[in-house]
Structure formats: structure tokens, C-alpha cells
Image 1 (cartoon, rainbow, N blue to C red):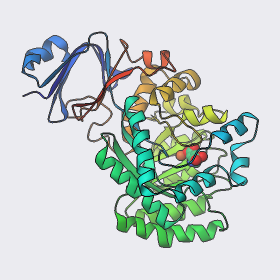
Image 2 (image 1 turned 90 degrees about the horizontal axis):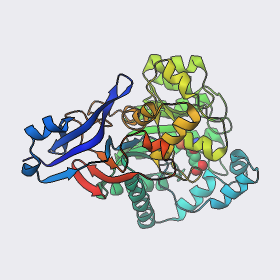
Image 3 (image 1 turned 60 degrees about the vertical axis):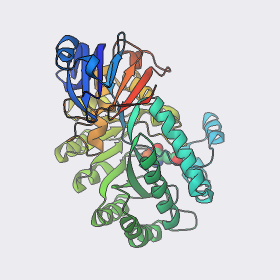
Length: 405
Ligand code: NIG
Ligand code: FE
């Protein structure tokens, strides 16, 4: 029996295609065993999969269907409140000045170290509810607000528990090299990451990726290389925060190490883009961060025009306090000259490639792909950026089951 059939959708976004996206107007989609069985014109699909024989039939008249968002870069697990720093930034204090005075990441580290596992879990489940309501069905979440073995492992354990109980799928990344804890030298802390934290993270067996903040005043290229090389020896796939505030060489490092993604890239140059392309590294662009910092946006056009398949992600964290992928798509269009089709593709199948999950069809609605999808209250995907500031997501299905409506 068909698990779910959705029919008469004004548009179904299926996946990457000729002009950015392959779409079906007046479409239907049939789901069996949690995956897409068929997608196409309503008449054709309902003939093969009659709605009356389905466990659940959804009339999607007037609505568009899109793949669930794949948010490939977040720091969504944290304790504390940094809204006062938001106010300080509005008065002209810079992100790095705040960090240099023990605020920013280091303040969230204090709050996270002081929070119990139960408090952190409760907090994360709330964030996941918000993400799901905004159409995110898969999210990458980094540790990195512990900066000691005990708290880093606690964060990863909370991420695993949330993944086990919440419908949103979580991809766990270890980011002990997110900042240098107070009172330590960078080299001394890198040694602790390599000799203490990474072996413990491997023993715990939760994290899949290892990320590092390769940035002036944080970890230089050599220190980042040490962390990522050791991470790989402990079974973790590299990712890099690269060229966010200055062009330091993180993108070239990502290319050299064959990282899955290089993220931020506000100051990447053409040689960096070519190096990432040549090594198959997915560039992850985070327009919400530039928006909240009042910074220059990454040059999405330069990446796309040179053939890169980019990802857009929310970078949800205490400094970029929005988990909305619809908002990231709107910024991609309005601030980075992406077309709505490019931006939506980057937020769905682009995110899947930034998480090494393209092979399963994640981020598309091709037959065989996971039936993770959203019905939106608008006739086409163009309305997502067009109607910025409004959450158009009506119903969310995860593996073919309704998980939010
Ligand atoms: O991706 N750049 C480093 N990490 C985060 C910010 C984290 C924070 O400020 O708490 C980012 O923007
Ligand atoms: Fe980040």
C-alpha cells in the first residue's frame, strides 16, 4: 500500500536541473517505505498510485512541494544568551573586539560548561522544533562550546540523544578547535585537541566530521592542518571555517586535505574557488552571518559562474540567531545575486553534498530519495525569497510521515 500520496501540487521541486531546478507543474508524488516511489504529473502518478489506496492522501492544491531543507552548518547547541552583544554590535563594537574581551564564543563556552546534559538537551529539542517548523529536515550541528574533553563529549552526547528522539536528522561534527580557551596558548590547546580530545571523541563514536576555525587570531593554517589531519586519523572527515574575516588560506587547506566543505568564504579569491572545485570541496555560504555582522557577503556568483555547486546554510549560532533556511534563501537572492532556483538548490541538494549525503538523493525528490519534504503555502518556490520574513512552510514530512503541520 502506498504510504503517502500528495497530488495536485501547483509545483514540485524535484532536484537539480537545466535552469537550476527540475520542476513539475501540477504534480504528484507517491511515497513508499519512507522514500519517493514516483514523482510526475498528477494524472500519471494518481493512475499508478490511486489516492484512495494510500494510507494518507494530501490534496496540495495551491501549494508547492520542495525537498526539506538540508542545513549543513550550524552551532545550534549552546546555553546562555548573547542578545546584549547584539546590542553592543549595533553600537559599533566588532565581533572580534567582543571575542578579545572574553565575550562571544568564550562566553557561550562558560554557559555551556555550566549547563547539565538535561538542560542542553531540552534547549536543543526546542531549537529543532523551530527548525522543523521552518522546513529543515536534516541539520549539521557542531560541538565547540566546551573546549575541554568533558564538555565537548557532553555536547556530542546531547546531539546524539536529540537525533534519537527528534524527527530532524542530525549530522554531528566535532569542533573542539572553535576557539582557544582562556589561559591557554594556541599551540598548547591544539596539542590537547590532538592528544586528548580527538582520541576521546573517537572512543565515544558519535562525531562524523571534524571542523576548525581557521582564522586570524584563532587557528592558523598550520595549526588547522594539525587538527584536521589528526581528526582524519581518528576517523573524522574534515571541514573548514575558511576566509571569514581575512583570507588566511583555509580554502587552500580544505582543497589540500580533500575536505567535504569549506565554509564562510567571504574573502575567498578566484584561485581559492578553482582549488576547491578541483578537489570537489563544497563551498558553504552563510549569508545570515554576513547579515548579522553587517559584513560583505561571499561572492556567490563567482563560485556558481566557475562551476561550483554551492550550499547555503543558516550558521545558526548565538551570533547569527536565526535557524530559518527560508531567510538564508532570501538573502542569497537579495544580497548575493543568486536566482531563487539556485538558492533553493543550494539549501537542499547543495546542503546534502556539503554533508557527503548526495548519493542517497537527500535534498532531492527523485525516486529513491528519502521522502523528506515540505508543502509551502504558495504556488511556487520563488515565493520563498519573494515573501521574505514569513515562514511559508505549512506541512513537513520526514521519511514520508507528517512530522509538522
Ligand atoms: O560560524 N566563526 C565561528 N563560529 C561561528 C560563530 C560562533 C559564535 O559566535 O558563537 C560562526 O559564525
Ligand atoms: Fe560556524
